[in-house]
Image (cartoon, rainbow, N blue to C red; front, side):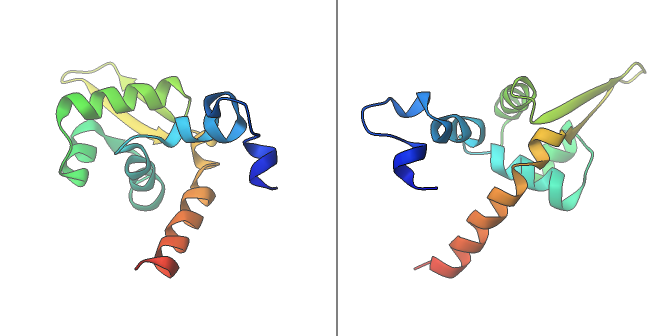
Length: 113
């Protein structure tokens, strides 16, 4: 598929399939969160994600996870217990983006200057 088909001239990028895909993975931490859930631990709690990423604030992680849940990329499962327990995992929709992220990683490895 050529870029002209995916992002035709004269159309706002956000209104294209390409723009839609970018909107789902856009942001400093979304792809990192997806990789942690796909490659390292398929189910993680909030604090585990925060410790694993290391450079993310509570507020940013919370906002990012909410956006990813709204976009149906992750599944948030809350357990009714004390203390509260919440786990996150990739949805099937989120898993379907992993090959794209893998290709980006491979490309970066081959083309890093």
